[in-house]
Amino acid sequence: MVSRRLTPDSELPDRPRKDEVAAKYGEFLEKMRTEIRSRHYSPRTEETYLGWMVRFISFHGLKSPEEFPAGAMNEYLQYLALRREVSASTQNQALNALVFMFKHVLKIDPGDFGDYAVAKPRRRMPIVLTKEEAQKLLEAMSGVCRLMGYLLYGSGLRLMECIRLRVMDIDFGSCQVLVRDGKGRKDRVTMFPKCCEDSLKDHLKGVKALHEKDLANGFGKTVLPHEIENTDPSADVRWGWQYVFPGNRLTVDQKSGRVFRDHIHQTTLQVAVKDASEKAGLNKQVSCHVLRHSFATHLLENGCNIREVQELLGHSSVATTMIYTHVANQSVPNIRSPLDGL
Image (tube, rainbow, N blue to C red):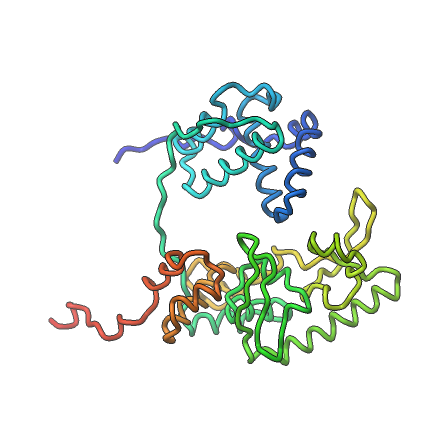
């Protein structure tokens, strides 16, 4: 077996030097942030794109973005594929960030940048829990995090879709959940698990009491979607626009000084799922997204149409949803192992 020495992270030329880049090119990064927000990209996209800019500038020796040499983008993308051995999706993410910077911030045509080593895509099967494992995991959770776990598994929500739910997005009458501005900036409707209706209603009573307390203290505002903020800025104190899962503390905007209550932080749920997995004794690498995978797989096992599952998940193409047909336990029970026939 041929062994190879992996380059330590401290020796990698694109190791983020956030303080140095921020100190030297803070104005440029702020300009990019403004361009991102003007196009109403999600906060996570903003964070990701700015992170790639820090790495890209560090890779080129902290040169000014206006002084990048010809082929700077190709050189970096090739480095990611050959030296860092990143996945195809990670390389594409970096590419999108760099193209955005050149086109919208530097106002430069990036030109033909196709001549670089492309990271080889890897086909991985999604990790899926059995119905018994899903039950064990949810029972090992408690409080608000268990309720959020119910929605991840019972409605097929992504992590941030669950965390950013608004009160008005839950329709108890029709047992539906409106996913607002999901992946690809698309709205969709998915099912609401009837079994957790009472728990969620009790939870919302507590949230409403908290909101009324905030209002009495002169606060009570939340963050609005851009289109609502522009057309109806006073909506930030209305009950329907409040987050279903608010944070424990008020947040202060460092620039405007505005005080508002944001949603619960994503790591709260991520840690709760990880801890519950260990407590339940599951021998799988469980994350919040595994509950969404399990939602789709179990629907198919129950005989749900693939197109219906596609709509519930919000996939643009049914080809994306088809991956779950490979892990759904539909035909395996009717097939015997050849070893059992000996």
